[in-house]
Length: 347
Image 1 (cartoon, rainbow, N blue to C red):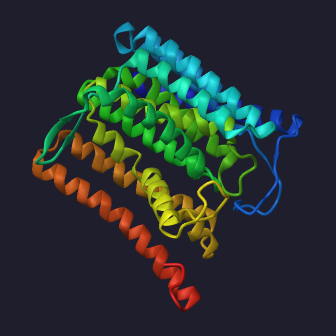
Image 2: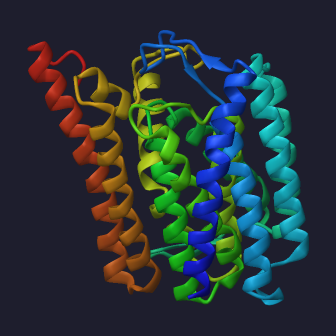
Image 3: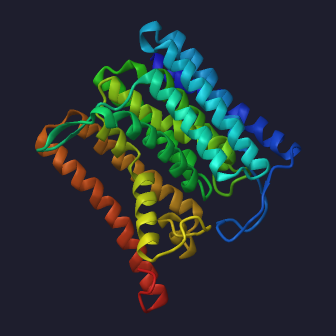
């Protein structure tokens, strides 16, 4: 009951703050002008993530109180707060005037380092048959890479209306469920408000979007999702469960990078090569593609919960099913492109 009230309360706050953010970014004249990488055709306000953050902070504060002092570590809360504010300011600066990649990378690394120092690192990765693989001294650099990497992956995936908010809202809900099942209460105070705030953002970002999330929202939200994986690993939620919950965005990003490397493309150049972008180019509406990725996240989230409580055989089947889902989206995209082009050049 407490979790439900916390979710509904954050959702209600988010509905108000997201509309306030829409008004604010219009006053600030923050506009996303379409370019070669864009999936939209008309200038649209950006920076709507400014409405997500107050809801997250309000909900997290209420969660820390309602769930009791045993549900959170003050040092972790402080570190996450500083990291999120840092990334939000960095993102807002980038939304207003492009920030150099080296500067962005530096602040992202500092934010990740702060959280790792406060929350600890992913100590091991448990795989079927192989068992637990201790990371040892590699735990810290790999945890930092995970935090920075997924934060950027989430930013890259925020390219069509609704896709980032829907994925984050569903994924955070699964993180909260996994925490409840495993007894890792240290996730609940953050996972539930994050879910409510991101789903509230859909009220202004659902296709056709009235405002985009912008870097001010995508960088901190992606960072918080990744942080749930690190904190969860310390609180009894296997890291592979977190990996599965975030599977659709991870798969699309890794596959796209690998495909571009294979074709010897410049990774720093703007592109529209993500699977979700290619589906939109093929003529699927942004609404349909967003719903497809939402359903995909529901699937991998359920698989993540099965991995959490399953034995060796179940965990192996779960990983196979998750990979199969990604391959299914890939094959679907390739087949549609072959049908359109007639010669299979895009497959």
